[in-house]
Amino acid sequence: MSQHQPIFQTKPEEHLVQIPMNMERGSTTLMNPNRKPNHWPTIVLSTILAIIGQSIAKLLENSYYDKINRSEYNERRQNDGVWTQALLQTVGFPLLILPFIILTAKKHNNPPIASGQSHFKSLAVIYICIGILMSVQGRLSAMGKLEIPFILFTLIAITQLFFTPIFARFINKIKFNRWVVISLVLAVGAGALTFTSTFGGEPDNAEQKYARGIWAALFAAVCFSLLLCNIQNVFDSYIFKRTTTRKPSFASVFEVIIFSSLAATLISMVGLLVAGEQHGLEREMNGFPNGKGAYVMVMVGQAVSWQLYWVGIVGLVFSVSSVLSNVISVVTWPIVSVLVVIFFNFRNFTGEGDDEFDTFKGVALIPAALSVAAYFFRLHKENRDSAY
Image (tube, rainbow, N blue to C red; front, side, top):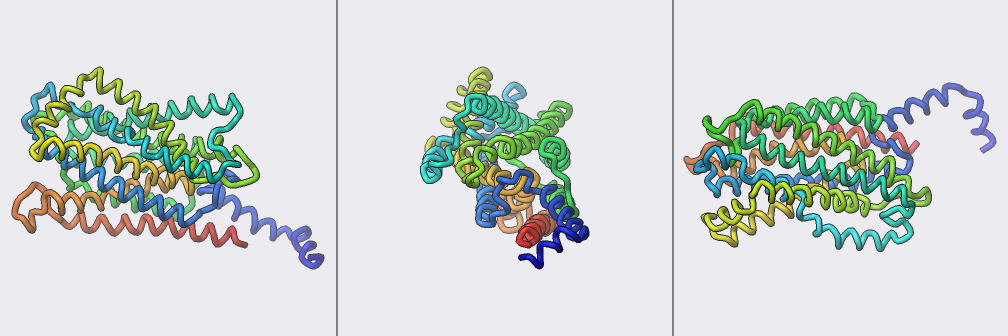
């Protein structure tokens, strides 16, 4: 020890090596010293849940719009169900209460809710704000898809990959290295190549309202980016500072989702009732081609799938950053695009349908995989550097 001590004290180049490495780590994911550094099982599990959850939710959403015959809706009923779709994204949060209790019980020395009254009030306000973003984003996204062609909606939705890094830079103080930038560029390419995808609720020419639909899609992208960055801010500024004796558990992920979804669910339910969509739900259930039971299964399936998605997305924010969370969300689009063709409109096999497995859908899977690989490689380097 006595031989090594003078080296660190007298050689300035040793400090010059350490400072850039720490800056690079701090500029990507390890914004808070209490953050669990790149725990691979958590990252992989969260990625899988986000992909599976979003894929199933989108498939069921397509099935829902395909079966209710929106083509028969008049102009007054064009936006029927937008609050319902926003509600489905959050109403399944009670399913997370049991795992939340179990994980909290295992970490009884690190309670999920801070005892300080001011801390609790701050978190309550933040969870309400996140809930508002969740509800508004879900409503605007559903509205945009019903008022503009899906190709245009897809291209506008990709802008979230531009908004998230900007907001993350100012809200979360993140700086980006080349691997994160490469991952973002590839994710943009993967999302853009899904522009040939179809959507079950896509409006016909008479239903298209470009001005309102474009603004709805754009603000939905902004809300989603703000949502992810504010969730990371909750982890970095509040949850990770609760204790200095142990790392925060995954129960924090369930805490954020449950309380934020509670606020979002209440907002969406009020919007649904004010808009009178409850009458439309009864009409849709009675007219569903496969019966009321199938209708309930489609709606419940969406609610459950969205919870899997949120656990994965918020889990990625918890373990890495809002940027990776957004990347995984977007690179799932090519997978959903292929699954929609397979389950609904695979013209090459059936000779029917409005969609087909074209070159763009196949090629989109390549930049999607490379985008994830680039970000994961950055995390691997980060872990390797932190070991020295």
